Image (cartoon, rainbow, N blue to C red; front, side, top):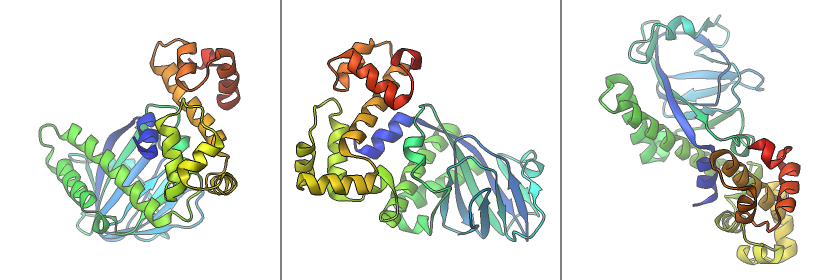
Length: 298
């Protein structure tokens, strides 16, 4: 798989469709802190989004999608100067998953929440802003537009198999929004996620993900990238924020941590799978990266 697919597979996102929101007139709604990542798409109308601790509110228009990545309290409003009601006031009375306020008609939003089974969500979301906003997302990607329309229909009609359909649609939309945002913000995105927009760095990262147990050298990775060792090392550090071999070690330990939690494989077997012939050397590296011994992590 490619690196983004690798990381999302390691996180094992599970979606839980929260609700839709129909609103009319002017309004403001305050939402509490939340676990995981919230996905939202405005199907009709527009509003402001203000996340607690974020510097500026963002205007969200019909067709826009956005992720709330930090789990902080937030507010949706047509006018941020209005006194906000607390979200349970209307969501506790939601009908078929859709809450209504002021009679509805002017504004419609669908939303979902992603939780993650793995322990490595920071790998992805530490590289993202508190509000990841993709303008006019449904117009940019036909598959996203279809998914949004289908998800809205699933919420409204609740057909047989709707829960499973909604979960798969949500994961498709999460990936599509990340793709669109990366394409638009590639020059501003720090870390490995932004580096995937650089074809040379992306080839090197993909090679490390494809063979994490290989005894990669800087010269070999530079060759994959089609660069000199010096140029590659400098470009990688500037783009990713760490050296190529540091990145490789960190990825190996994430893979090892996942196997420690999900399998009964012996530590020496896991060590060998990520390139360590010595269990002692592996354990030392694991403790340095993860802050705990393999046995205690398991």
